[in-house]
Image (tube, rainbow, N blue to C red):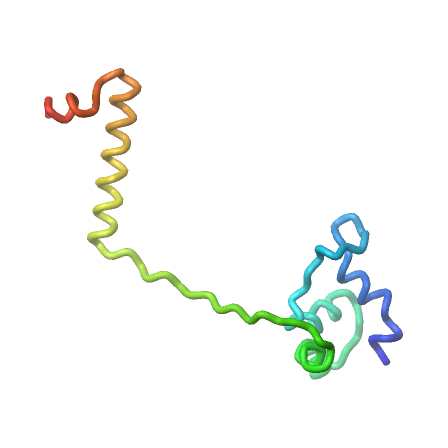
Length: 109
């Protein structure tokens, strides 16, 4: 009943920055209850928490749950290799600016 009575509030969730309804405006259905509460709709906490899953179950909505993976930290060897590569690139840029052939510059050292 609350949702039906406050349809204008629900429509405001799907508006763009200009206040116009947009099919491009996507909302994470898992956070739908939270978004309704932020827009001023007074829902009981258990209703707000469960409205997204209920809509997925009975509303024929698709939901892709994505996982994020953290990349492992760089090892000392990788850090050294990156630093050496950066130094080499800087030397090549410096040599190019001075008009020196990078192969000849290395031979002098």
